[in-house]
Length: 562
Ligand code: ATP
Ligand code: MG
Image 1 (cartoon, rainbow, N blue to C red):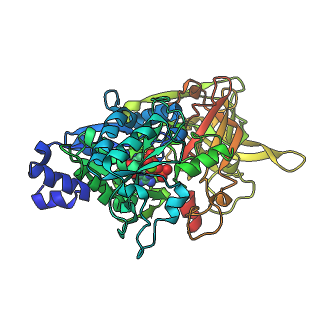
Image 2: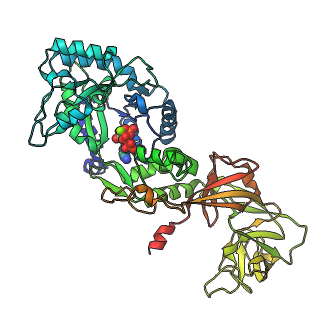
Image 3: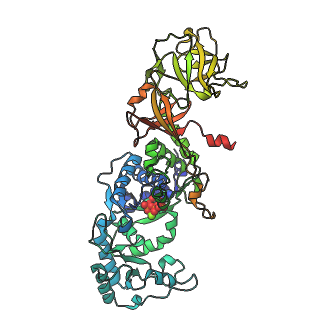
């Protein structure tokens, strides 16, 4: 590749990194981090950030840390820490041992740096309540009303700050603020809060700390301690960068990271804020964080998405500086493309009706060879039992069919996949007129599904032997929301008003080929002509199999829109 061609396909962050490496910055080393707050489960937006940060470290032989930004004790739980580690390992395919850090391990160092700023006259203790602070912050052309602490001596502020740490004030009674610029057009620079008093227990430090650092103060320090070179965050933080820089510039002799912003991922038919996802969980509107309809990583995993598909999707959407909404179809297509390569083909009938082969011996069973995966010869073949009575899909029979119906209808011949040609001879109906049995005759000379005389059939349908079939529950998922942008800030309605009431369809009596009894949750299957499926890791039991539809074979929404 020429130099220009190489540069043309770099994203803007790779470009910056390559320039930095060329310039010998930081000794040519790079280090990135993924900094989740452990207050919820990770979603596909986080996956974009993980793929970016982890991917850069890998590509440029750098360091990567998974850092828990656990600076807010009241909302954080160990359950979230554990799930986040599992999810990051799943997405990256790498063990995170040795790469995990906690912001709470840096509290003592952060505290020392806060004292340094106080001693330099750059931070002060303020006695305004959060409400007063809001009322006093001014307007774009009016400066904030200065806090009395601005005029205190460093000694007095140091004393007050130590009292804050010692627990001599109640929650909300004091804060430590940076002394920057009461008139700054950027409100983040109007003496932002660095520490607040919180008396809840922390998941790691317990009751040791009564004051907790704010995100803007803490984040750059965490980056500095970990010698992060490129601290990558989403665009909302662009206006926080001057503050990020101000803190680091005013501390002596510390490692200097730099912040870069990229566009967050938004997906159609999806909400992506942890707060809203938590609301769905708490409200019982879905079954939990790992409900297969959720855009969470654990939901994807349970639904049968693969890390390879998630990574391919993240690569495809790229990294840019403009916010946009990505069509969720792109994600579904990435899943289809990956599963098409890896899924083992199986036969399963979701809406069964019996097909009786009248000229087939009553008590005969044949084992017919079927290809496991036409995309990968190495997956080999298997044998599927075939007998006189089969199940086929109700849809694959029509008594009075239109012209271009190539499946079973009286007089028409079709191929039973991997088995025989059969010609439909009629059907049996119940009193209500529903078809209970379809009848046909087979041609023994077409074993394997090909005819020796070159006779062709238009349709091929799947089947399972009624005698050997497994019963299973099959769960079909659709989009969780009916609106492209359920979260539209312009829209007065609540996003929950757009929940799709048909997003889960349960089929309780599907019939599957018997080999599926041995399936494990990491297996991926294509039920021929239907879609991609996997065992439901939470609910499936050997005595009651449950399969999830990961994704349909084709996009039915695209068809509907046409
Ligand atoms: P949410 O907005 O869903 O509550 P968050 O930003 O509060 O997420 P954090 O735990 O703070 O969640 O996020 C960890 C990292 O993931 C941050 O660096 C953040 O920028 C990134 N991130 C979060 N959401 C997205 C998204 N939709 N697209 C890309 N990156 C994201
Ligand atoms: Mg956040």
